[in-house]
Image 1 (spheres, rainbow, N blue to C red):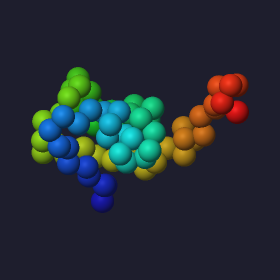
Image 2: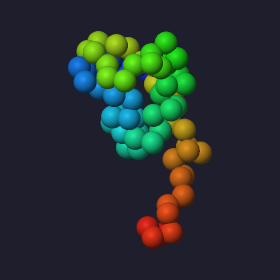
Image 3: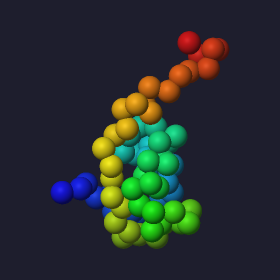
Image 4: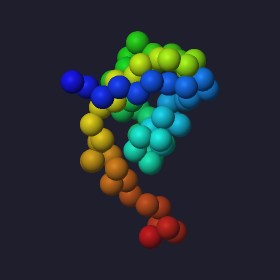
Length: 68
């Protein structure tokens, strides 16, 4: 059974990704798992989004030279 996230009024893709995985840059993984909502920017309350497994290969993003 897939995990589900129920939106609250005002949620956006990046905010949900940050809340779930601590990285807003992973929002595309959420969109891929929920193509019916890909045109949604700001969610109303009560939308059920399918949450895919945390994409470990994307979590290891390189830091820019000044941050390493």
